[in-house]
Image (tube, rainbow over all chains, first blue to last red; front, side, top):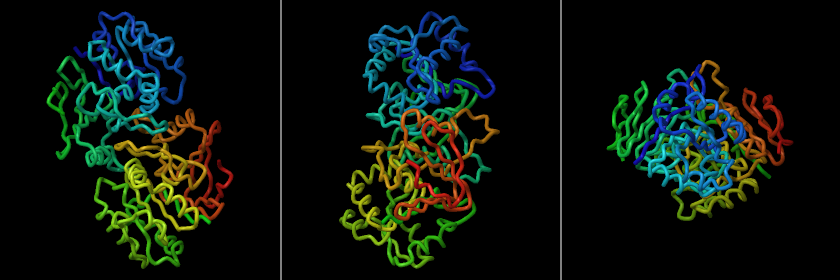
Length: 235
Length: 235
C-alpha cells in the first residue's frame, strides 16, 4: 500500500522551491488537505520554524496546509494520524539523528508502508533507502545508526553528479565514491540526477522526470536507466 | 614533542604520488630509515597490499623503506616501535573504523604525542583533528565513533574547494557544509587546499605550501590565512 515520491532535490537551478514538481504533488496529494512537514534536516542550520514556513509557502499554492512535526507534543501520534508527510532536505546526519532521538523510525516506516503518502527530497530521500551510506552530506552529527527507513530495497544517491572531466581537483568523483561503497556493501544504489524522482506505488518503483538515472549494482558496470523504467527487480 | 605533517592531498593534478611534497618529506624523515604505512583507508577499495606498494614506491625515491601495518601480527606493538608513520588517503570512515576495530586509536595518539614522526594525507589528515566530522567522504561504513586522534585542537577539511560560481548544481558548497557544522559544533575547522599542509612541531602549528588556507571559527566570518602563518591560537 505504498505511495511515495523519492526526489533528488527540492529545487532546480533558477526555479522556486518545489516548483518543478508542484503539479505532480497536486495530483499525488489530490485528496489530502493537510500534511506534516518534518523539518529536522535544517538546511544551512535554519530553525524548524523557518524551514516549516518555506514548506508552507510552497504547498499553499496547491491548497495544502502544512504543520511542522516539531510543533506537536506527541510527534509519534502525529505521524500515526498524518494524511501525508513531507521530509525536506538539509543534512542527512542531522535528520537521521533527530528521527532516532525522537523514536520515530519505526512509526514512520509503519505509517508509510500502510499507505500514508510520503514525499522526500534530498536528505528526505536518502532516508527512504536501506541505509544513509550514500548521502553526499558532511557527517556533522554522529547518529545512533546509519540504517534508514528501507522503503525501497536499495540506497539512494540524490543530486547525482556526473564527473567533471575538466576538473583539476583530486577529490573523488561521485561514481568513484559509490564504487568504493561496493567494496564494503552489496546492495544497489540509484543515482538520481536533479529533476528526477522515483514514484513508488505498492510494489512498483518507477523513474520519473526527464533524465536518466545511474544504477550501481554490486560487481556490475554502472548503467543508465530511462525515465519510466521500473526498478522493481533491483535488490 | 610532536612532529607532524597534515597534508590536504597526496597527489597534485598532473604530478606523481607524493611528488609535490617529497623533498619536504626527505627533510622531515632525515634520520628515519623505515616507516610504517597504515593502508586502512583503501582508496577505490584497493587491497592493503596494493596500497602499501604505492607508498613503498614513492618513499623508495628518498631511501626510506615502508612496511604495511597489516603485515604485523601485533599492530599495536608495531606502532609503539615505529620510527615514523604514514597514513594515506581513501575513505575516512573505513580508516577510522579499522583503527577502532584494531584498538589503535590510543596507541597512535600516544606514539605521535611522544614524538614519532607522522605524515597524513587526506583521510590520514582528517583523523588528526578532534573529530572526522569535516571529511568530504561518503559514509560507506559506520564507525564506532567520529572522534579522532585530536593531535590539533580543531578539525581538518582536506581538499578544500572554493565554490564554483558557474555551477547549476544545487548540492551544498564546501563553505555551506562547514557553516552547517557550526550550527551543531563549536570547534574551528581549517580548510586546506590541495598542495597545502600543516606542519606541527611541539606547540607550533604552521601553514605550509604556496596557498592560503580558509579558517572557519564558530560565530565568526570565515577568513584566509597566508602560508607560514602560525595557527597555534586556534581552539
